[in-house]
Amino acid sequence: MDHDTNRRTGTSIDRDDPLAELDRALRTRPRTIPPRWLYDDRGSELFDRITRLPEYYPTEAEREILATHSAMIAEVSGATTVIELGSGTSDKTRTLLDAFVVHGEIERFAPLDVSEATLLFAAEVLAERYPDLVIEPVVGDFTRHLARLPSGGTRLVAFLGGTVGNFYTDERRAFLGALADGLVAGDWLLLGVDLIKPIDRIMDAYDDSQGVTDAFIRNALAVINRDLGANFDLGNFEYVPLWDAREHRVDMRLRACDPETAHIAALGLDVVFEAGEELRVEISTKFSPGDIVAELADAGFGDAELLTDAAGDFGLVLTRRT
Ligand code: AVJ
Image 1 (cartoon, protein in one colour):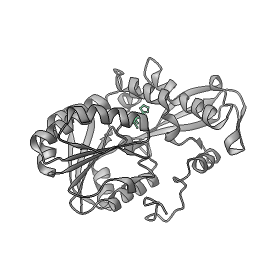
Image 2: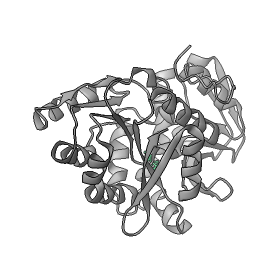
Image 3: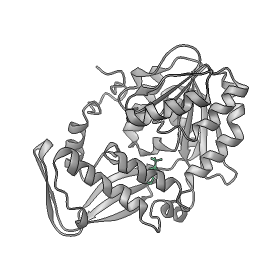
Image 4: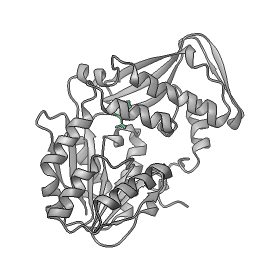
């Protein structure tokens, strides 16, 4: 049994098997595609472009928080190992690491990412910038491979960008629980969360005028076509971002204009769409400070401190495994 199997909720989830997970998600209503299918090379590049869009505020806001508070985070935590989940190129993390080198006790940096190529490239750059640190890249998926995190010393796990907002509520509970299980009392979590704010600003960030978000969401179908021998007709789908007021999240969907049957060879599955039927590709949950702190407490994290940018758009929660 994988370390992060969801024993807290007792549900049998199929995170260990991406194909079974996709098969099941496509049979629910609305039909759903799990976010892992968004991030092939082109998807990663499109996301990178999203972070530079004028409408997409989270990246800059988080950068501002890190610039302001990294020295305090390094000092207060006294962490000797910094771990980053879904590290990519560890771009923003350099601000954090710079501060840890000057103000903290850091000895080791362990970036975890699904893309081995990205990791190896990042590791080389990091090794050059931080000659005194042990750089320990870990290839893995943060929803499945938390057991691969290095142990020893005082650890600080950074999970930035607001990616925790991509999980559905149950998945988020399972993830935070599994993360807590993998840490020991005194370890730290630094969690990036996008905060609830006027809906117009949120929706503009997910419906940009250049259509980059549309291309990013649509790319999931191209990935499934290529990797799983499917034949989704990309031109038949229209990008429709919705605000789900009850769950406070952006719900990014593709709507089939005409009826369509997509065959997915690797699953032996025909997905039948009626005209106008919507396919959910990604959600991005926005948090109130009280809610996320309560969820963290349920999972086993205490003494939470919320750091925000001056505009109050985005939050970094610094919290301790209790
Ligand atoms: C990478 C999950 C933080 O939800 O804001 C951006 C992904 N999707 N625009 C987010 C995303 C569409 C992003 N995260």
